[in-house]
Image 1 (cartoon, rainbow, N blue to C red):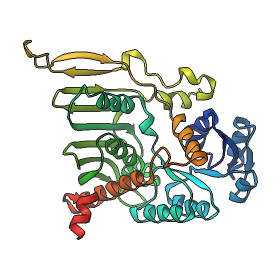
Image 2: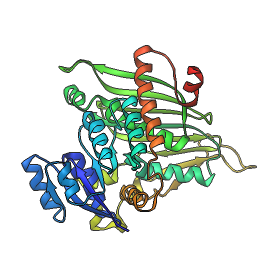
Image 3: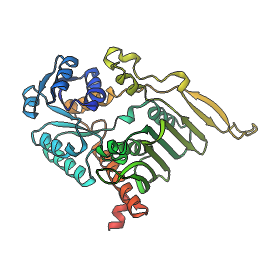
Image 4: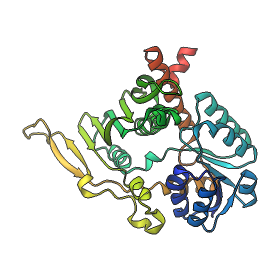
Length: 361
């Protein structure tokens, strides 16, 4: 069955990170794009000829949409989501889920009461390196995973521009936090540092480092910056048996920003260049001399494809289920994000999840 969906917003996010993957999904029909800017409307019309270009949510519903994607500034997520839910529409809301954990909780309650599906666009779960790391964990080759390190560095950006997006914690924090929770499970505590810069809009965080303790005893150290000049990504997954190392490129983002869409050749989409594949290092076999670096093996990267997020969302609409990112997981990501800000401001470790519930009790 095919689900009918509308896209709200056609800026960089809507045009580059949502529309191409919606169009490529086999079980989704993009029936409307809501946009008021004339130039963007013309662009949306040219790139989505089968979709109706409309100015408001009434137009989206008139086009037959039963679900919407909200790709608008974070400050609008709460109100737009609540309005869509009130109208009985299923929702994919871009990250961050909301400006605050309390707002995200309100949105989740409203969706539950309305009986509609709500999910958050945590697309990094569908990146090549995160998928490869998860597959290695599931294979058992790494044994008990003890630590996850993930850095998302995006060069230099003017502090005023960073401030317009709510700071790096709100902008990139959801990516790195969700990846940590996706791989290692729920958190129990958070300790964070924020690098602040003065701007016309007030002090703004331009970089962060977040240490997360997980329920299973594992630890994560995730970071992001727009103030270092470093452009790259770094992943380290360590265990009792060894480690997986990946310094990868975002092949999907690079492709769509260059004007290549997944609908053009879905089968060839999302494959990392062989030269960028990660490395697995394991202890030497029993009885063999142990070396400092162990046995090294190049691991082919898993195919990355954000289209699958949308196909899973459509399946949940038509057949039931929690969708690609269960709302409880998205809420926990917001809880950890808010705890990171509290930790940095108060210079302390902040309990989250079950640990926080126990403290409250």
